[in-house]
Length: 119
Image (cartoon, rainbow, N blue to C red; front, side):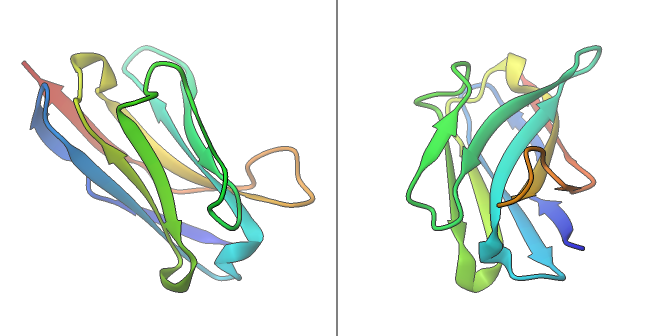
């Protein structure tokens, strides 16, 4: 089992920045690909960004490319999501998730952290 806890959500004005953190415990963090997802009010959960186990490869949803950056520090068992140039449409609950090498799905999820972007 892997336990994931997100930190860093809050209220920010449009154009501002936030950095989310996701701290893992329970198993070796570097075994897992990490992802960030979000669920906006009234919408389905959607993919935001992912990073491979070593941190050498990342991928992003088109809606956040150039504004968000995913990273990880395996020594600290933590993944990050740096969010810049935030837009009203980025308002959502953000979740981090972990996926093992042998899985096609994200196996473990955090409880989520609220990000609210105001005008």
